[in-house]
Image (cartoon, rainbow, N blue to C red; front, side, top):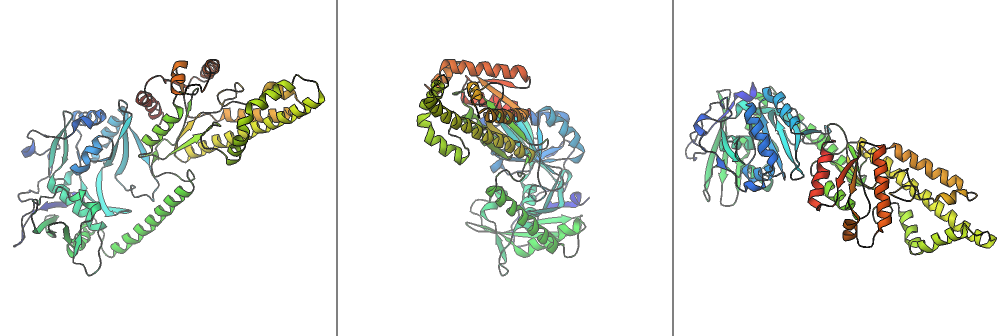
Length: 544
């Protein structure tokens, strides 16, 4: 196989210096760690920040005898184990079924992407494992075979598990984890850089830019050492390609011609001869143009296009429902921030408060809000008064309130339909509140009072409002979470925002909703923000 044919040796044509002298061309042993390097594993710094799910995952891999290793520089490895960066894992293809079985037991999920994105290539998958104790997740950038090429044209399978000559163990929370050796990391980084580097035609040496500094951070160059270093690739035990490195005081350069020969050798080893470099560049340019256009459209029209990553099972509409002071808006912001790290997310607001909404409704609300109590009392008083003058004044106000209620119903209906459209495109939609048709006046339900329905001309508006709320009730969220607590918690968080009678009425209505829909989950909102967030994270993740 091409991947097995690629080995590396460090030779020094005079007067160049040795880079990684003594590296053998033997393959990795069956256990995944070379016998000569099974000494006590080095400890990873800042072990306290490692997510517990990482140690549990690697322990399961070791117990199942999986052949795997981390192909990642140590500079970003700590962030990867802490759930702040990707974790690149190379897996033997024969162990893929066992890998899927292990991550499924740990509630892992896989994401999918459109073909125009740079993270899509054969043999590579994005897997995510939740850590319920921290309310975060681990991102595994899993490779069955590592491919190199242009950013949007990773075509050439150069490194598989058998092509790695040596693994070095580290200790992750008491678990031994193999990581790629310094020499193999150099080979991988150089092969990747060969297809990504560019410079002006008259430049003989290509400088390693800031974006690649971490990739070459572990190169075996002594601090302050300057001069020429040579890395040699041997293909199929016969043809050898050398890459010259020029180390200076503040920069690192690689010879332009050597990178070109390395690219040609990799293509030929994979069976591609001729002018495939031009084809690769053309495909890369077309895909990158599509990618940039799609990203621009996503910023201009959020939710109209599929995100870069979306759960393999599809999007999700999550609704947080509860009285005032339960922390709905705060938790929606937190959950969006957590899941948006790797998934496409959106927020929807169904209330009539300070959240997003139609500009017409918000403008009218700003005008009417200071007089709302006076208008409501006028309607209640005039509905009992038979005087024609007062009845005329009350009828006008009642008609205005009914139209206001219908406007709110149309806005909420539009938000509900939009949330489901976003979920269909693969987004995780977090909704602050959700309409209900069971009771008027509470929990974002119908707002036209029952006694106004008897006023001539307003019954049609009342029926229209009821029909809209019935349609919204049929468009249920995929997951509804009720935040419940006692009145003291609400009063402490938002003093004077709601009276105890109104708070109890909302809790009673939520109990009726749960009696009708057994799938509604309940979360105790009296705990701290972090604890409530972890409970919400668990419910949401298990619904993906």
